[in-house]
Image (cartoon, rainbow, N blue to C red):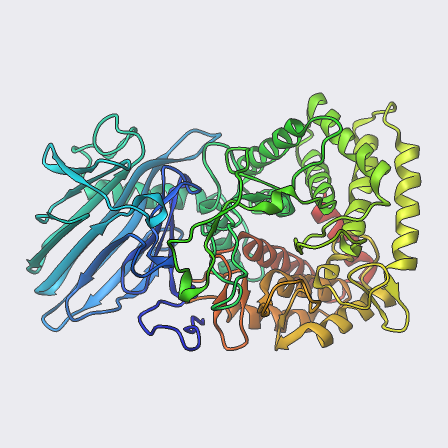
Length: 626
């Protein structure tokens, strides 16, 4: 496990990969290695970052909890939960703490419900310890100080929906609440932070005074473990797969079923650089979540995600282009810069909103149709209205497949004929045809879709492949490599043993590799200064591609190496520098999804070493579609 600090950064700055991730499926929190909550948005995960020290050590708010003489506790997640346990060893005693966003059981459709309570508690196990707490929210993403009022034995912020109750005495110090206490063996200190609506202390649903912190802890652990226990995967990489599934559940939004690409904004893809984006959105390219959830035994969450996805597609309307991303409430917001925040390690600008929503990305349609086909194969539950929306998508691509677009990587330049976009457009057409057959819809224009699909396939093989290079390329007429093309065999565009596929895999490893197992997504000039690290989604895609070429042991070695690149709490960022620095927004759904897919592909291949390539390709197709 790795969590290297950025080269030349402030030594007090926690490495991105060292942060702990908490979630109640409504909002999220990140805790630094010193125990400080440095990222927390209210009233939802895409809301106001009232604790944002992650992005500015001076201006960002913080909720710190520390034991004197123990600057960094030893941390782990309690098994099968998102409850963080911290063990403190001070000069006069030891203590154990738990930090969690409280949850409770829901109903079959929404099995996890948020209590809207951040709970922090410390119990002394031996001797005495001195505990210090500071609650310093700064609303407006760090722009403003909070004002506090004493309310019914606790504290309420006046300009942001936060309430605090603590077993140790707190006093107002400017915009902060501060307190210190010496605890003896067996004593426990608890701080409860309620957020959101104010219909009773400290939240709208539970966490009332009669709810002891121990009960909140027990109920939260039981709720997470009940959800995790529904998964039945015991194959290759089972521990990493189960943990990744738990992370993905934490990145899901309970109100709509949407999936956050990451809970953060503007964590840099290059330390000190400008490659900083807001990832608190749902990208349709993450539609593989549906199959991951079903494959791991979490069918109801898969259904909710598919309904959210298709509802968003329906809202786009006939004749309108489908945006590649959408907010977790189904809408997008305009991108803007927050100039008062200096950025992580001085990496400015800090942005909220994402203008990539305005781009034309044809791969979006392929991801949506692939997910819908898998859903129908698995459940048979697509409705007539949903099928009409999907038909509109397929018709659109049958008309527009010859057009250029902006591509999956959101390079902010002119549109080009990106090969990955063409491949995913082919997926859209292909899955549309399969769905029409599966549904028995004889009125669908299948022959027109098939003509477009076959013409597109031929064009990609002619114009998207460079015989001299021995590889598919990023765009027609270029010789640039693109790691997105590792998915050509995964989506079934060509079989893994096709020489054009194996050549593409080898060229990408040679041309985009920066360290063992690590690949950049591209090397082309994208118009921005500096350069990125390795794109971890593509690194796990390499594993799946190698499996489908029959190079299973090689795939396993790469997978094992990538597992070592996780942070100390098993979390992955979007990217990784060769020196071990985690880069980009964190934790990243795209990466954890690709890990699950790679492990499932490896598991199927390694269970039967005698499996031939044709059988493996057939299994991959069956696995993707039911």
